[in-house]
Image (cartoon, rainbow over all chains, first blue to last red; front, side, top):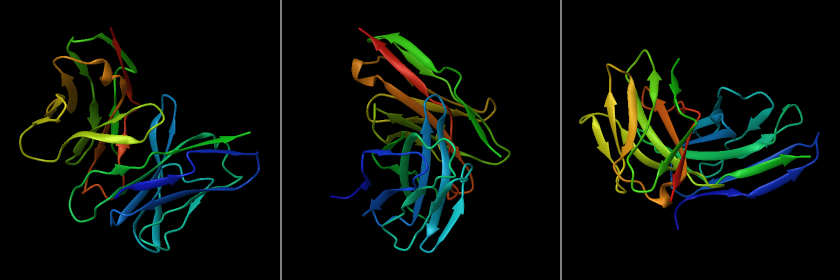
Length: 113
Length: 114
């Protein structure tokens, strides 16, 4: 069954703790993206990666970190430096070579207490 | 830099009535445009896209959008809505192939009233 998996669906953490959100895909897509969604704000790009072992900052990268050691995986770490981490986080993938739409995972809702 | 403006944060409409969700964009280069739909606590699903060719694009569930370059718009329309169309709708734009990610509008919540 092809698709994008984000786990867990709901995540609770205490303030000051780092937390890592998982994103796995078996679509064989080259590019992967992390977005943050806040109510009434749309989606904002955090980080993206077009190829293994390479990634770029998006519009709101401060307080976040990523790695891309495998084509299938693009984990996002929300660090204690992120001032307001409570949000809905969405991972997306895209086939490289030409203009293609992005496919989105089901999302992880992070709540920092 | 590019941006997307969705003029209405919320659109209430009666079931079986027509609806238009407005989207305007700004960009200094050629763009590619998308409409995504999001149901509560879920990811986004692609509704339709404009890449090139015919300026009128259609989805399989009755939605359509028209790319208007002179007005920099990509409004979404449906002639008759159903209760199941209740969702959040996002307009998005990209340029240069889209490798650098999408720029999204803030979304429009479509509320279907029985």
